[in-house]
Amino acid sequence: MSDCNAYIDANRDRFLEELLALLRIPSVSADPAFAPDVLRCAENVAANLKAAGAENVEIIETEGYPVVYGDRHVSADLPTVLVYGHYDVQPADPLELWDSPAFEPIIKKTELHPEGAIFARGACDDKGQFFMHVKAFEAMVQSDALACNIKFMIEGEEEVGSAHLESFLEKHKEKLAADIVLVSDTGIIAKDIPSITVGLRGLSYVEVEITGPNRDLHSGLYGGAAPNPINILCEMIASLKDEDQRITVDGFYNDVVELSDAERAAMAKAPFSEEEYMKSIDISGIEGEAGYSAPERMSIRPTLDVNGMWGGYTGDGAKTVIASKAMAKISMRLVPNQDPDQITELFTRHFEAIAPPSVKVKVTPHHGGQPAVTPTDSIAYKAASMAMETSFGRTPIPFRGGGSIPIVASFENILGLKTVLMGFGLDSDAIHSPNEHYGVFNYFKGIETIPLFYKHYANLSRS
Ligand code: BES
Ligand code: MN
Ligand code: MN
Picture 1: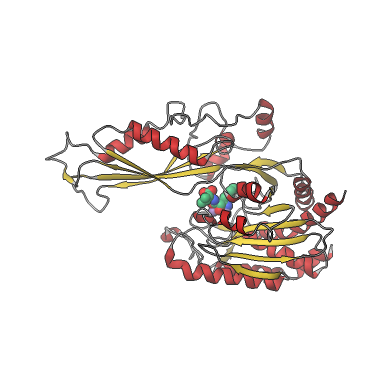
Picture 2: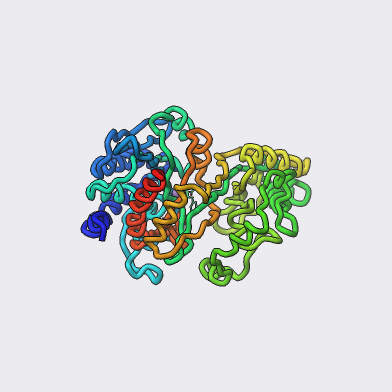
């Protein structure tokens, strides 16, 4: 066993305890009620970085929540790795669907995780994952094995769109200078099937509001002739996809990069079972765009989904009413080379055009994000692949993910840096959902794999 692994082994219980302490802080970035907790979480991250051996640790203010920075310089001859993660988490609601409180982490055994899994909001996304880097760093420092210079930047606004991070990158270009960005905020295909994420989808997120009559109306007195904004919103939304479940927004697919047959064939090699997929979320059929497999629909194809819809009377019992307004939140996941601003504009134009003259339409854009693809022919990819091959005993599969991490495109555009997405989560971890958890196996697999990345990356950089 390497010194590094011996150190990890000797400190397992503490490595878990420290993560649990981090998970007890409800750093929900979306809800201003948690602002003091988010700031307290930044302090905790800074203290952890310092304790692990980081120098120049700083809590750097932004227009929003701060970024926690820390570094350790080993030698000017060595490459520099910039580790990115986020200490903010999604809101925990609906709270009543959690089996144990979201911010009182506990370790429980499950069928998939006989070694135990850590249940808490943020356990996987992303506290458990970025904390692997902090602990791997500590292990490397303590066993004198840190093979690269290292910089940490852990932000607090990822779950609300990283609105202030681009200007942070602009402002701190020099401080953040590096050779590669390393991120664990994605997943692997299965506990025994490692993968490296090589693509993320972008995002356009809009809120729509349909206004009919100037007040809520008696549905008997007015019903039949008055425009019902809820009915009309339903029709408008239904028309956004055709019978092949292709999105009907004019120009929506114009910039979509189609994969070659060879690329699609390579993708199809990643194991996927429709049966298991359906079973895992208790559905009896799969939806989606004609002509594409389920994994393709979830990664290389764009989507349009209603995330929430409301209006009218939703309380107990019945109230006979035609509402004045109906609202919906709609997300569009984007693929290379779709541009989020342009898609938002196309959507707005289209949505205004399909509304009947009896109603008014308002479309309000929320945060967006650019899609990203990362190379598989770089030394950084090779280093990650070799690291995972050693720790899992199996070569990882390059895999296009369906989620979004908008800042990855900015790392390239602003800092000129490529990213390696070496995450260790599982789809079954229930990120953003009640009962989010992270396998103890995955946590330690990450801590073991990360030092191997540094070793291989330094070696490959030399040759
Ligand atoms: N870590 C996720 C993204 C992710 C998860 C990518 C799993 C691939 C696999 C990230 O925290 C996230 O939730 N991103 C948001 C986007 C953001 C703009 C709110 C998302 O994808 O909805
Ligand atoms: Mn995340
Ligand atoms: Mn998330």
